[in-house]
Every structure is written in C-alpha cells, then in structure tokens.
Length: 307
Image (tube, rainbow, N blue to C red; front, side, top):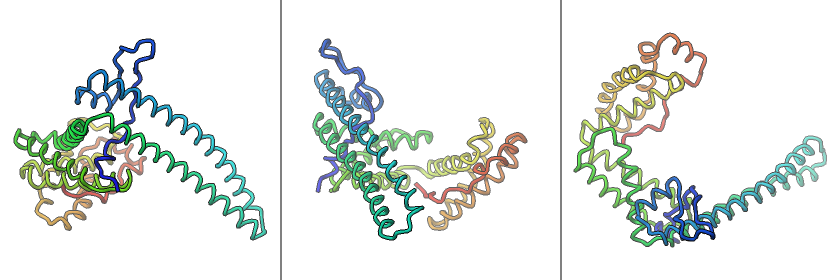
C-alpha cells in the first residue's frame, strides 16, 4: 500500500517549452499553465527549475513515443476486429465463430493492456516528479491548490477575512487527511481525495458560511442549472438578473425542507423556474429558437445536493 502523499503529485499536463538548449545552458526554463504557477508559487531557484524542465521534457518524450506506438497498434487491432466482425456475419460453423469471438476478446484485452501501460507510465512519472521537490514544497503547493479551489467556489459571496482564514485552515486539514490515506494506485487516490474534498465543502457550507451566504450559494447554484437550459440563447445581463430574481425566493423556501425532501423538490423547482423564465424572460426570437432545440428544455440534473 502507498500513502496518498506518495501519489498526490500527478504529472501536470504542461510543458517546459523553453527548457534551455545545450548551447545556452544558463537560459532559465520557461513553463506553461499550472506548472508555471507551481514554480512561481514555490519560488523555485534556477537549478530546481532546470531539473524540473529536464524531467518534464524526458517524460513528454516518453509519452509521445508510447502514444505513437499505441496508436499504430490500435489501428491494426481495429482493422483486425472489423475483419473478424465481417466474417462473423457470414460464417455458419459454430467452432469457427467461437474462435473469431475469442480473437475479438483478445484484441479488446490488448487495448486495455495498452491503457494500463499508459497509466503505469504516468504513475512512474508522477513518483519521479514528486522527488524534484521537498516535502515542505509539495505540502505547501497542495494546501495552496486546495484553498484556491475552495475559496473560488464561494468567491462571489463576499467572504470576510475570518471566513477566508477558516477555509484555508480546513483546506490544510483536508490535504493532511489525503496524505495520510493509504491507497493502492492513482485511481483509488483520486476517489479518496474526491470524498475528502466533498466533505471539506460540506463542512464549509455548514460551519463557515452564514445563513445569508448559504442562501446566496443555493440561489447561484439554482440559477446555473436554470440557465443551463438556455445556454445557447445568449441571454442579456438583465435577463440573467430576472432569472436570479425568480430563483432566490424559491431557494429560500427549499432551505426549510429536510435534505431528503430537498433533493426532489429542487429538481421540480428548477423545472418550474425554467418554464416560468421561458414565458416571462425570453423574447420571441429566443422562444422560437428554444423550440427547435430539444436540449434547451431538458429536466434538471438529479445530482443536486446542498453544500
């Protein structure tokens, strides 16, 4: 068993495009995306940056080579499967038909094996990548990412300094819990981390947000689901405000129900608001466009939950 601390740093989908060529060994590497943010946040010196760039470049080359090999193999496998399926439609001999089906199963297993090989490579790369930073650096970055994610979820609520500090402390506790959890592989790590992060947001919702904050958060979530049905209509800011005005009193009413009651009532309420908005908020052109788009009036998602 490996701890989440050993698996928590996944190789980032970024590049060290400006890694120094041999002719210019003193040139500082250039990073992109999240890797650039990480390097800046941790204030990595040039030596560490160069080491990170070299490892990322090597990893990128290995992934590219493996992906190219797999692409060619998949092409051959798909061609063989298509031919086997074609023969199955014409063949009458039961033994030969079974042999063809067995061969198709073998080919499918080969594809799964390639996918596992790719995951194994990523795990090896992630483990090596983690060694490029000190434990303190990794923990600092994990805390930062968790806190930024948590705070971003409630950015529009106007949280005060005390609430922000509470969320940052809870984010740190969540990271510590993640790092202490024993897991077998990356997929298990992701599931465990997701559960811990879900618990973090529930704690924030229940214990950090004020009643007004929670009502605003529920209203915004309800608005997002209602507006999701009109995403192709390019609603104006005024139309969006009017939809929000429809959502707030209903979100407030739902807060008086139990969690079990809320789940079904939420779905029904979102559909009701969407119908009301269709009649009172949309203009004639938008209504006509909506009628031609069956997806525009789809039912609310069944995954809604508080917090």
